[in-house]
Length: 484
Image (tube, rainbow, N blue to C red; front, side, top):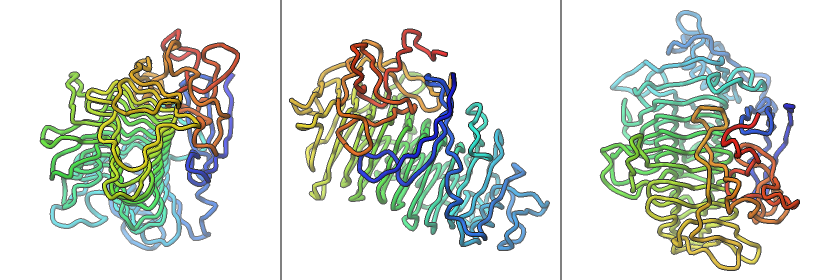
């Protein structure tokens, strides 16, 4: 029997799984066919009576006719996405733009000389939420999520001068930061400036974007939250030797990535320098946190060619926390960490899988405070000895985690890929025995990547202990598919 469960999740500890408070509706059976949508997003709690709400009613890329009058209308009287953003930029309150389901928006207005909000990428300069229409109603399929495509003419969005910007249940595709009038080729899907306090990407898809840094996202925001999102099939191009971040380049403040998947991001043939990373956390002196997230098969081309320069995650001069993460089968190394400035930045890893990389599970982990486990446990699995896991912390080195092939939380799509442990996997019931909660960083997270509740008694010994990695064995892999 399907059930609706409303969960309020609050963050006040480094191990917690949300910043702020978000209500989620969980709709589905105890399978991995889960549809998730935030209920109301709670954005209107902060809205003043003068806040604007626009529902886009045309897929044409047109400009607003009269800026600042509070009305979204182009020359034909229609409300386009660009016109709605232009009008919202004139308003000082937190505004909301709703996109009808199944809609596809192609950017088409170009100008090779000027870079203004009327041309090229969509420029956001005021507090704004861009959301699927009726966000409290679960999507029947991934195809309902509205698509915003830059069509290769520019990046898709540039965010500046806003306190808070949220994207909810949208697909952001085919951005190219090397096109148009861009001098800095940053952020193929979204570029977020250091003038932004809070950037949120929720329940969204970011595919097929290109840039020199952060092919999916380049963020300098003070705080960034990426939740229930898929950042995949993006391409890093070579502009300078600083090219990095096939999916994400975080060069600002703290960033939290949860319940998400980053897979099949690759390098363009123009990239000649090596050691590129799917996620680059760079010179922030702030913390990046990954909870219940999978970083899979990056640097592997469609024909099976391994781009062995492509690693999973690399943090330089910023702390990194991994709890119930799965970093598996990337073409290069899985994890790198370097405290170049000697600020005692911390690498903290618990209940995570780092395995089966093309080169080595870890690389350049030789500075800062390294904590793969202590007297409170580590409960990590690596498939070689390169991470130098400490003994006596319930870690397993040189061990195959025995994971199922990647599959989606949405049937046969490639959205939110994850790898569930096989029934005989050493990850099953071998996570931390501490009660799952949001207060103890040594404990497992309460929900896995698919929002399945931990722990499940996967080895049938009448003692339920959480599994290691992003996904809990859900007792249905005898079918190697969803159990309806």
